[in-house]
Amino acid sequence: MVTVNQQRVPRKRTYLMCSPEYFAVEYAINPWMDVTTTVDVGLAVKQWDRLRETLVGLGHEVYQLPPEPGLPDMVFAANGAIVVDGAVYGAQFKHEQRTAEAAAHRAFYQAQGWRFIAPTVTNEGEGDFAYLPEAHGGLVLAGYGFRTEPAAHAEAQEALSRPVVSLHLVDPRFYHLDVALASIDDTNIVYYPGAFSTASQKVLAQLFPYAVLADDADALAFGLNLVSDGCNVVLNSAATGLAGKLKATGYQPVPVELAELRKGGGSVKCCVAELRR
Ligand code: ARG
Image 1 (tube, rainbow, N blue to C red):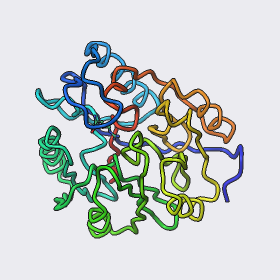
Image 2: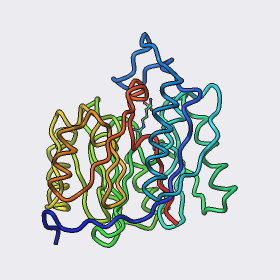
Image 3: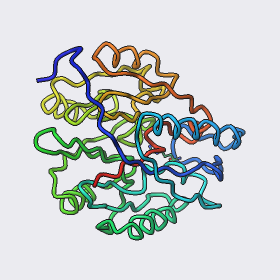
Image 4: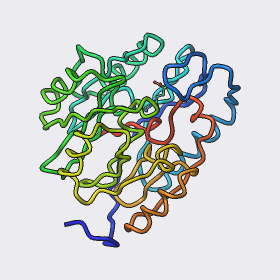
């Protein structure tokens, strides 16, 4: 059972990131993107590099995917696949502006000898899939409503051999699961109930009675778009309220500033895919 203030134990992770060298807001495919905003690419790279250094500093291994010109959202590496126990279920992007990113991810996994399962339906990788290795024996949570098709949830279950729980996202500001929910350790999550349908909120409450609940301010500050190693929780520095809640529950918040990438509608988790052997 999860108790407040218990000792949180970090586990070493392997991540995949992609530098925002070609980051831009040239099209708007989510409510956060405004094509009239100016992006400071130099600053975006700097902030992204601080995130990478932070993860390395916490003892994690970070692989890098070479960025490609003409793919301004490629920095959001979490969207390329979901990886569980060496099996990689590849992405198939909803918007044509991002379609070509899938091949870059696929090439990375195939070159490294991972077991790659090609998708046949739209899904945006860890943008809409989260994995909890010790919850109910290993559980995949999956979002639908804006990007990933429900049919991809069934496909992911076959590809990853884990039960997949479908969750209905209903607020366009939270267009991906990973801006509304995150795993904070192997068994537990933090989420913003308002992003989900009433029925999906009930499902989450049933499966995760000890979840940390986030409020509007936490969610709008991109606080849920976090990366945790089971103890250290790397999250957007604007999410001060959520940082306090996590600290009170025994986690160690590690704030990072990612203001430039927020203009693309993403933060910490969007930039970081987890490679699970
Ligand atoms: N501009 C990107 C899009 O709308 C942002 C993706 C953010 N990634 C994520 N994992 N939520 O597709």
